[in-house]
Length: 545
Image 1 (tube, one colour):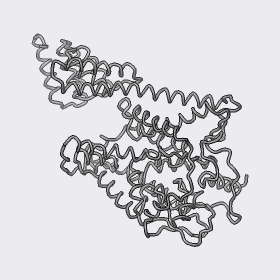
Image 2 (cartoon, helix red, strand yellow; image 1 turned 45 degrees about the vertical axis):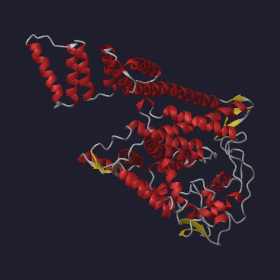
Image 3 (cartoon, helix red, strand yellow; image 1 turned 60 degrees about the horizontal axis):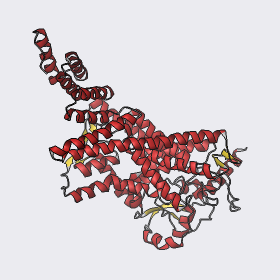
Image 4 (cartoon, rainbow, N blue to C red; image 1 turned 90 degrees about the vertical axis):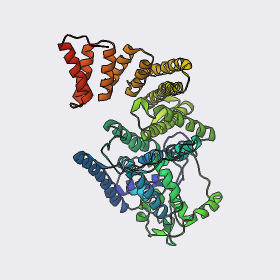
């Protein structure tokens, strides 16, 4: 196929998905609108030209990653650097009073968004960079990312933002606790303390940056998962800086076909004279591809009140799910978030959000596979004539495994959290009632350890503490030794040496102390205990328990 014809076909597909001249992506027999209706383009419209802004935005996003690498290198070389420039660090400011660089950056970006709009999201967010890279690779492969439209899933970022930043303050006020005093905490020597490990970080990028885009469409994590984007969306409502239109617009639809933020640009500018949709991330691709230069970024009235006034007169939006399905998807998202957050002590919050979103998408696929005699995804048939294809069987197997893993994880998390709740509750009970509560809490923790697929150091530490409190020193020592193998620390080895000493296991005491010194050769407590142990053995004295 000649390049011009392929480009025009890609343009028509983009128009069909973005302008809305086909049914929603999950209706009918296809998961990604493989059976579009006929689309009528104006006679004077050709394929859209390539955006001249894309390369500059790519350079900006690459520069952001180079700055991140420079930040990490500065910490590695000097041992101390500026606290992480992550919006999530604002939670430490609100809850502990630690005024860090992440909070200042987040607050500054919100103020900038109030004036200029969501430029940060489009030009400097590292997660958006991964999503755009995935979209670019898919388009190179001839795949146009579809878009799933939901009434309730779009509210997830706001709910997560409330849970992260607002709810702790509400709980503090309700409990009558005073607000923490602000203390400057702009530098740190523990830069990576709140960051995930390498493999979990890569998995987060893969899930939130690539897999979600492939399954749900361009910038899906921004639309359905990012809690920081919720604040930027609210600030963007009032921004005077917007992409606006003049009288030269001829309604070709190139702007909407090119937009990677899933904004119906042609409809927005026709009704309001500017893009009012808060999902607009000011990538400026629509400005660049406009054949008559009718679009430009300018300052003026925000139009927020006008948008509210005209909301009832807007074209009725088409969604992919009925209300019962929407409620079911929201329930599955909450279940997935409950199951994955902090799972086995390694899954961070943003990764758990991405996994929960994928679980909701998987449930849709299963529902369609059960109900539909024919179903396709990315032009590949999953079910034809009521029978599963090879790809359909593979998809059903993978999705079934994911859903089974989700429910299993929720079961493990229930026992872990219920056990922790009972142990905390036991501390507040009188001594005569404390033992039954501790026993119940311990039973839940042991069930979580029994059913878990992976060993979990934090869980083993909780079990150790409870067993030690109940006087079961031998079992406590065994669990603590397993915890040391997973996450060794000097403090754990010192505690293990004390437990082994109570059991009279001298060689085990020596081994624990030597391991503590291997981690920290100048550790004074371990050195002193080892000297005393060797002195008593040399003198032929019995080591006291």
